[in-house]
Length: 255
Image 1 (tube, rainbow, N blue to C red):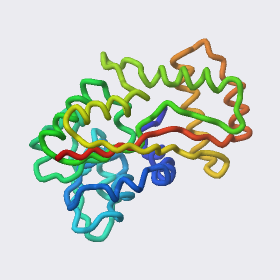
Image 2: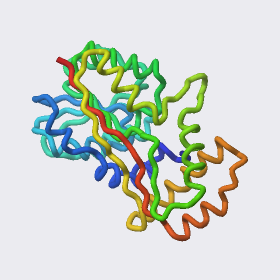
Image 3: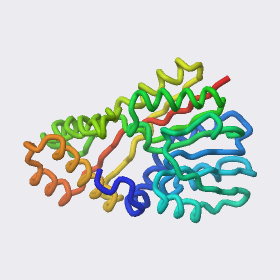
Image 4: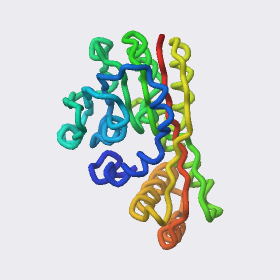
């Protein structure tokens, strides 16, 4: 999706993310949770959502590849009893040593951007460290509209193909990521709990809904250039539909 990692897009989606995440998984976290590493932290929305729900003191290590986003995140997580530091780097380079003393590893909207091998490596690092994992908002490949249109299924299919595309030799998992991650964690000996965490979009969230529709159809058109979606997108934007965009939240606990 164009602008997927921009500060404006992440800010636009933050309220929908917060509403969608499965809050009941927080109660299942092994205690205590004092040190948290957030992978692909973006603007820090996960910390803003989760930190107030956990006992203090807490120390968050916000990790991201984008120095601009990392600077924003470390400057905009202000919760009493919570300290923050930034860690510039790629999730695929994470080691067990990086997680020394870490109680919980979190992420949002990240697993679907990884490959099978990258998820395997991440799970192995978590298993070696013993840290719990709360991975939220992984794309599930489920989109429904009210009202529906005949073109919806073709656009959704093309979008899912785009999510599974090859990037620089890496085959992304896209909507296959949640199920693959569950198997990988269970194979590594973790207890895994999942919950649906669908975005609820519509006329009450006009900016986000319109931007998501543009990105969703744009990715589908990029994947299948033969799709003529101009009239479809125009109609959808003129009368915003209600939409449920499927995601999955995953909690994995070792030991």
